[in-house]
Amino acid sequence: MIISTICFSIMVLLVKYIRHYPLTEIIFFRSLVIMLIVPFLLIKNKVNILGNNKFLLIFRCLLSGIIMACYFYTVTTMDLTDAITLKQLSPVLIIILASIWLREKINFNQFVIFIIALLGALLIIKPGFRLDIFPAIIGIISALLTAVTHTALRNLRLTDDPLVIVNYLGYIIGLISFGILLFQQNFIFPDPFSFIILLLMGFAGLGGQFALTKAYQLAPAKLVSLYLYLEIIFGTFLAILFFNEIPDILSIIGAFLIILSGYLNFIYNKKDY
Image 1 (cartoon, rainbow, N blue to C red):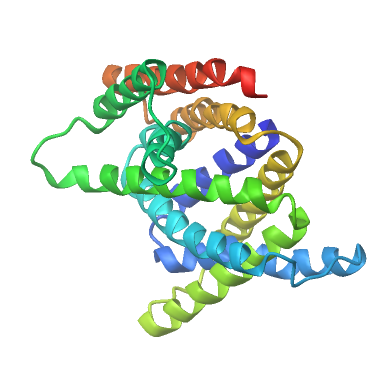
Image 2 (image 1 turned 60 degrees about the vertical axis):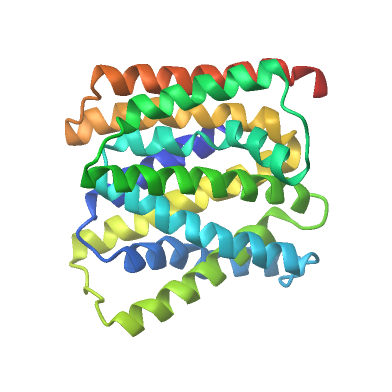
């Protein structure tokens, strides 16, 4: 998970650097590296490329495509630290999803954890009647959907190889984004330097996705999700280093509260590991 968070932090840094390219083009290049490399690894390891739980594989990939579009949009329109932090609301949002879909009762400890995370999100969003709040709302939607996909990923560990899961992700999202790109007719032919950046973004995404998938295969989802908060720290460091984006005091407090809520959620559920 530490490798995964480092890779994803580098990926979003590169996404922000090439933010002048169309969103669908960035998503396509994010998937292209997977499409070119992973099938050969599947053949080499003699793994069934079509997988077993096809319905869940496709569902998870379609949802991940929406998440990727939402997340990349927030990364390109918000401060990097704020965008990454909002995405890490997902472990706490699982509490809400469980109460709605599984009708699990929310006890006092869970309610306190959720309120802490909500306060953190509000400090980052700084709600008000203004146009720049829209990316933050998209970021929260991304976090909510991420909570669903991480649950699906944990279930897929029982039926499919990590390479199969990553391969599905690359091809489904890659082909859809390429189709949209052709329909929109707004492809920008990258210059050599930007092309290298786009490829590096894809390699970072591949490394992060494979490490994430492997982590969910080896450990309980609640334990794995705790390490997602390291992405906030890595992302903040990279944002300051490369974009001179220094978070304001409210964003810093908000990020701290969201990390605290994740840690408390981990401690509360520790007995289940």
